[in-house]
Image (cartoon, rainbow, N blue to C red; front, top):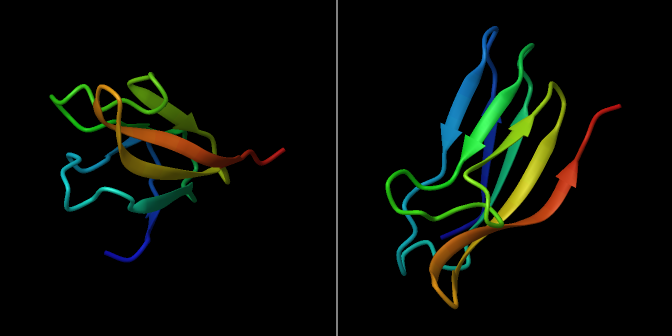
Length: 88
């Protein structure tokens, strides 16, 4: 799988849920950018406890972006932040 880019664009709060991690996504990188006018929330895989650096979600204000890596860690699949860009 190639890397993925997701643009969240909404005039109200929006939530983007990362896919459930399996061997299929192991090593996949997602970059998510909020281009909307309200805060966006990116959540780990639903129902799988596949958190983002130990947290259920990460919040992005307008213009913020995050790059995430899905990988198989010590306690199973998880997501980790490779980079976070905050608009000032």
